[in-house]
Image (cartoon, rainbow, N blue to C red):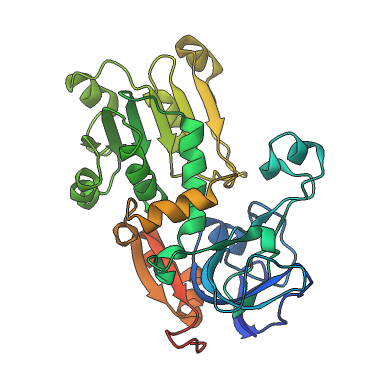
Length: 343
């Protein structure tokens, strides 16, 4: 099958690759669309992702498609079904799975290598799509589900003030979710001034360019007494440190952005102590896939607000090697045309 294969550090090729193993529990899915994730770029740069990398391997884990074949044990899917798949498999038997933490599974593995003609995840990882949700938009299920888990971690209470650091593709998804939480103030801290209009359209109540303004001073002058929640969606050393600084007293801070393990952020424990901060991270998407599908289907999250380009696998290879559109938003690979032909 045709696939975009990572063969090693900075070694990427569109080439023929063996189809994934098909078992009695498998659902063989013809992939139509696949989203480019920041972790794909991390893997290309040799930094790893949620699970270990074993070369060679097709990149991509944000997919939508149509079922082509099902294994003998599969009960809830049939050929022709429109579906998406959660890439994170857990065993259901280890200590963490049995104690409500399946995303921390000791035997976890990725079961979606989506920049390819086919994937064969187990039935447990496959989800039906409503007919009213396009395959294009449905490919954003996985990243949106990760954002939902981040919002769960943030635990916004109705009427609180929330500050969002970074309005890239993930930040733009987060902003739309924050609008649904009942926060009274949603502050966006973003250096790209051109995103200001979109920020307000999607629910921001205050937009601050940190390159031009003192963030804490602007918040104070706006009459906002405390920043109750902060979610960081960049992962850069300085934005992580700034997020902790922006947080108010007794605030919760979620560090959602994937930081660089080779350049970790400094942590001022004493300053956090003085404000009694709660600092959290967010790992993958436990229990959030169906919620993401429902939000997309009901148009409560607007995909067009953060998708910057649609590409073939060949074009995607160039984008990963020389990022342009992925710096502006979400890039989606189109694997097949409307008739099911591989592009």
